[in-house]
Length: 468
Ligand code: NAD
Image 1 (cartoon, rainbow, N blue to C red):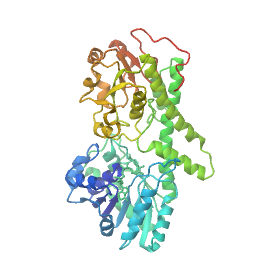
Image 2 (tube, helix red, strand yellow):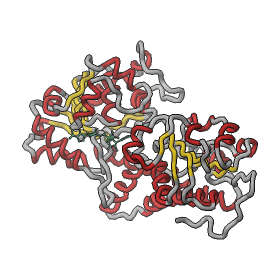
Image 3 (cartoon, rainbow, N blue to C red):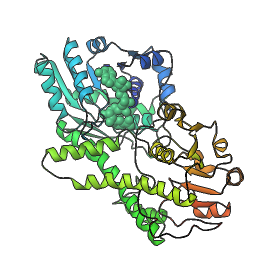
Image 4 (cartoon, helix red, strand yellow):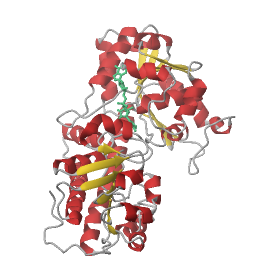
């Protein structure tokens, strides 16, 4: 099938490469000409496992990059919208990119198109797209609009796309529903995974995904509710971690005990410095806004957001407490990406912690295995950049771990102890056990667990748990 994908971001680029891998002819378009030039010159643009292989395999054969949206639409049967839907100032989703893309599709319409809305949008956006198409002169018989939310996670985006748990399709007629089944045909009959050269399936992949045909409104609601629920799980365990910290319980054991209940599940139950990224923060607030517009005060979502903000402030307070004073202190920071295995720093808790500590006049040296380049764009020269983790630690007053990259969980702790000026580690992702740190002779502060204070315990203070 001939497919146009609008937006070459994390979702559009991965979707385009994976659809080419499934045998479709894809043109991926973006208004950002620099992105298109780089993609055409062989760059992958984002840090994502298997993406370079797929681009190399299909670029110039079944996969093309262009800034000519009109031509891409004219050549295609299916047009996928994968543009950004950031939060606007009041918290609801800014749908202006979706609207612009819709208008441009309408302008280019030369034959029947199935418009697939893949960006994460509030419920009823598909209905708005239908309306905008009509207002821009398109007859209802010339297009279908389908909701097909994307559930990929950055870091495992390619395998998430090719081996999804579920594919949700919200459409209003049989024609569109049938076409969408064809689009994903090789995933639905399992033929992709057994084909020659297939990207290997993750161990826990379902043999075939759940395929759900539903209405656009239901499909849109599934996506927003999914992200809000996952964010809620993170905030829940973080709120429990505060109780663990205050009472001497161990949040890591609580997590295992809690998550082993099949009704609860262990995913997204890791205590830390909170969720970030380009999805959860904006999707939770957009979901709250749409709930309010529907006449329900979804207060739970407000609490989810508040706990997330508090968790970050709590961590900064923990740094202050461990260091006594922070002004002028030299800190080594490992981790800039909002989570591991991605270069994405959008809404990264790590960047927020760094900014807060810079405000308090710390001197910071950072390292991240994937996100240095993107972090430089936002942090500029406010921090020093180290070429490897141990260089960041050299003569630092403390080490802060802010992203859960696997390599940060395997540091040579003897070397850490030797390099640091003071043996202080603050772990915002609970990558180590207190026992390991004690053995290495390091003072260790983590989330929801008693601190390890091998040298000169910090005196208890009545207000240490207070935020801000
Ligand atoms: P992104 O910001 O990385 O990419 C969006 C791209 O769209 C940009 O390159 C931008 O230049 C381009 N664009 C905007 N308007 C355009 C237009 N009119 N024509 C052509 N290109 C245009 O965003 P993303 O992370 O890929 O997310 C896209 C959508 O998918 C969002 O709604 C997001 O919530 C959702 N989503 C993201 C993820 C994720 O992990 N990033 C996962 C699932 C869903």
